[in-house]
Amino acid sequence: MTKKKNFNKNYMAILYVLLFFSLPVTLKAGKSYQSILQCLGMEEMILHRKKVRGPIYDLNQKLISEVSSGNLMKVKESIIKEICLGTDFSPSVNFLRNLLLKGKTIYEFDRENEKIFRLQKAATETLQQKVPNLFFSYLISLQSLTNRADCLYKAIPEFNYFIQRFRYLQEEINPQKLLNEKDKIAIIFERLKKIEKVIRKCNKKT
Image (tube, rainbow, N blue to C red):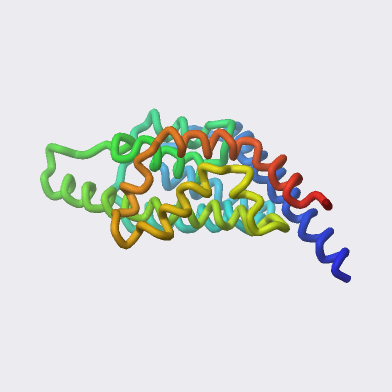
């Protein structure tokens, strides 16, 4: 029974990864996207159609919720294209990557209308404050696809570096400041390009 359970977990983890990496190609074949919400909504539709759950689905739902609540939020057209038509990650992960590495520079603001400008600034500030938790929640949920509790930390030491800082320093330092080391974040995403190999290795019988 245990062997069967482990086999099912390994199979689902690998299946999830294969679907995860097929998403950008699927979106690339579609139309251009006028807003980040439209792009995330298309991704959600594909996830539903393929019956994909887990880390990518959870991240997609959280981001849709945040963007919908800040409906005046506007992401630059060039960034939307990069996020939605990228080939390395799904739109949700690409959006998270841009939020972490580029921060507020990804947004456009209506500076001619003071009221709208203030609402846009408030919406983007709210989302940026939530980015650290979105980031760690996503990585921890990837870890849950593996059979060994510390495997992802070993495969991605930069993740372990940040999670330790987050656990012990979040009461003293603003979580956003904990993620100021952009070079390490960039390395994490480079390593995530090979996440399917990491999961297979983590779930391989020793």
